[in-house]
Image: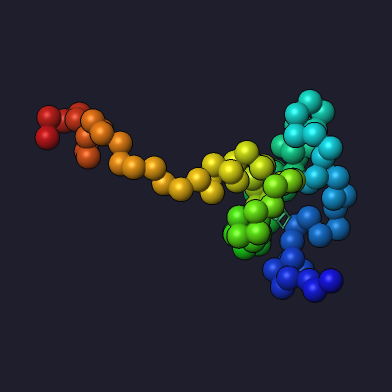
Length: 94
Ligand code: SF4
């Protein structure tokens, strides 16, 4: 299988994949997810990793510091403009 260029610099390259792909994202798996996300915070290829996960609809595991639910949120199309939301904060009387 071809290795994507950015994966060579991944902080998770030599780590246990189970940390990033726990059996469940809840219960004990939740702490694995949090550990994985922490590792992603310092990863030099976090951006391309997240972009890849979004482009390829990765439905499982932690990618680019996000879990599947967070990626679903990021993938949602922008909704219609919300009404009754002031364009500027109202504080300051301007
Ligand atoms: S951002 Fe996280 S999942 Fe992606 S390569 Fe880096 S450590 Fe691995």
